[in-house]
Amino acid sequence: EQATAAASGAAATERFRSRERADGPAADTGRVNTLVSELLAAAHDIIRRHQLTYAEYDALKAWLIRVGEDGEWPLFLDVWLEHVVEEVAHEDRQGSKGTIEGPYYVPGAPSLPADATLPMRDGEQGTPLTFQGQVTDVAGKPLAGASVEIWQADSDGYYSQFAPGLPEWNLRGGITADEEGRFRIGTVEPAPYRIPTDGSCGRLIEAAGWHAWRPAHLHLKVSAPGHRLITTQLYFRGGEHVGDDIASAVKPELVLDPVPADGGEGRTVTYDFVLDGE
Ligand code: MBD
Ligand code: FE
Image (cartoon, rainbow, N blue to C red; front, top):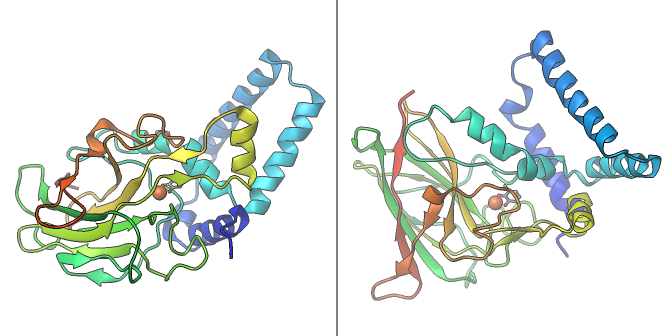
């Protein structure tokens, strides 16, 4: 079974629909009026400035219809808009940097102790990686029992539950840090992620002459009671596309420098998280 844009899009759309944030408080009428009016005015301005033709208008309509059919709205929005939403949402936050969540988070991954290996297949391919660190508050106080949720692609660039043939929770886990806020997670290095080329987002990328790649990354949600949860991603220095992520989600503070593991095969990296107070 091959990974297709439509299958992973449908899974991402279903996942989004089933989560809490999807139906938040009713929006204020004045706010909707302002935001939608300005969005439309920006579109009108682009149409006039670039003398949009009917052929182009029809191509846009056909493409928008297809994004929905492919279930690729979560992918499209998270790749091309979420980074600015994240920037605005966390402008005032102290401590470690966050970045976008993307479309492939699934809550409820298996619970793991502070020193653990992520669920993976026998003989899981990829360079072994030990990812370790400590969670503290902004004053440097260790946060005992902090939660470190991690999800990532495998060494082929596929996420469990969004590509066929992978065990349900492959490379997904929820770690509870120890009394000093420390954790150590055994995993494998993920491959860069390529946006599916057979769907509407792929068509857009091709039509615009862009590339379809995100650099290899680990996704994390780090939290502790009384502190602000951080959703973030970590990248690998020198990795492909760290400098030109299609999703614009790399920040200099989020680039890891793994070193060869002493005694064993693979690499090790230490990264500490600092959580702001509520
Ligand atoms: C990903 O793996 C991802 O993290 C984002 C933000 C968008 C598409 C695929
Ligand atoms: Fe990702």
